[in-house]
Image 1: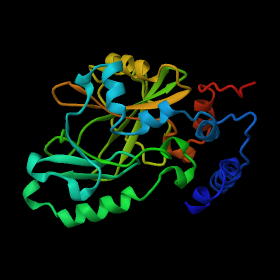
Image 2: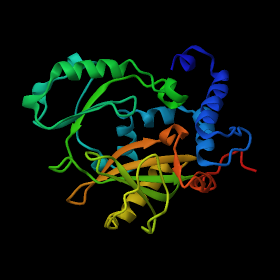
Image 3: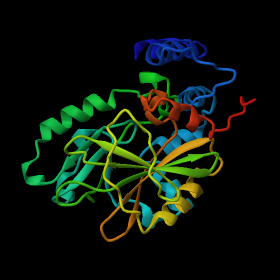
Image 4: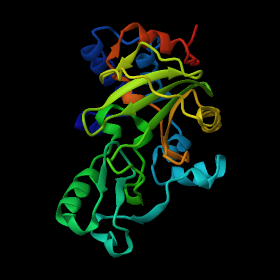
Length: 282
């Protein structure tokens, strides 16, 4: 973390290359990357822009999503604050979700406001808001996000589950949908193509072996994803599908898993890489 933070950006490739070799046991080819994870490393450094930073910000992205596909796809916003001490609990319903806008996994799910531990919430968000996620593995789009806390409507089922569909888009086209489930028991995943044929690959988590019913809104998910992904080399567009069929936007991820995925089988890394076309391709 402090290595990234305290050295100049022109030395970041060396750190990223070192981390990549430790994880993958092969050297990173910057001039002609081939695998998906190699190309994600390239995107970290050379596809940086103010727009990518805005769309990585879980608060700022809402305005862009509303203009691009419509406000009806946003999870209702209940509040925004600059520090955990400012959270107005009296204005919040019985159930809600608190999120830090500037990173990953900084969520606090509240299913009963009467039983929450406000000191614990304050402690966690103070810790989270001190972290700049750009310095964890070189994802520059996080560096200039101003941290804040948002509250969104609680949309999960009674058992806390909600279908999570992450659409993988390459050069503006949706190719695969990653389905995630059983978060409460131990996260599992499955990949499907755009015709809803199950794929044989996963990464970093166990494969969900049961067949997942084709969502009735699949064509809509693909359409919305491609609208949001237009003009980007690669972005993963995340959606939730509610029981009533409503689609809600989750987030946009430009460097999925930081390019540090453990693919199973390993050739999936190169198969996905062949779908992602960069200026370095030859």
